[in-house]
Length: 377
Ligand SMILES: *Cc1c(COP(=O)(O)O)cnc(C)c1O
Image (tube, rainbow, N blue to C red; front, top):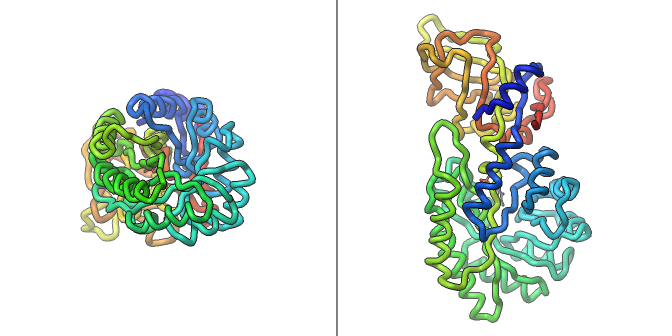
């Protein structure tokens, strides 16, 4: 959503070139909404969604913890004021020397999904707490994360037993239902799997303490999405169903849901043209595309709301593309995007819901285009 503060910023600063503007008031509201909706769960903000120092500092001050995927992200969270005790190294794919560096910085919570990763952690971070990620089917997610991360629940049992044997503290189970998850009940079957892992380990005398319920909380693009409140209700109901009166500690790791709707990208129409005289669709080329930060338009997965100054006018379906000389740099073509007929070259457009997964996805200088600039206000 384009807040008044963002409008005022763009009107007075008139930044040149495409840029992201993030409104910290919206991030604060999102944090409070998560805390209110899931008061019994610790919030670990997924740093990769938007690692702007101002965002991390705000969240650190509000009491957030941080889910980091690399040593660089850990350092950013520490710089923002988080202590190492509030940081989880949540990537299941780590170099052993990075585990050692994280350990030296005081981080003691690590994700694993394989025996091989457990061995690295036992050597580089002896005695640390580990949680094992289990696969989910990703159904209902607009940006699924299945397959690459996690193992089947039965293997998670073996991995956590192995971690225990190697002197680590087998601490819990994690999963991620898939990003931009629009079904509030998607956590149910993953929590059932987590409970089965708890039971199997308890039979072997290993008592897990924590379920990391990951991210997946959506942001509003073109369609409305359920509130944090609705997710909280559904998730806590599922926890009661599967864990009864022995509910473990829980963690949530919102990324997109924390920052997505806090950011707006200002862009400019560079060219509007047709491919033939009788072409049905106009091609609208913007000064930002897949390589400038809009990578999540891959397969047209994420459909951003695009506002123009002519939104009341008659619309027609358009192809929307980026400015680079790569034919993959087309945002929407399979499903045409309605834009006003009166839109013309040089007009500004606002791409909403772009606070998450944009700046960090932008290339450094593909075709000489600068990385996406960000202003955090
Ligand atoms: C990316 C990621 C998240 C954040 O996911 P969202 O869908 O953006 O909320 C959380 N946890 C882990 C481990 C991740 O990799």
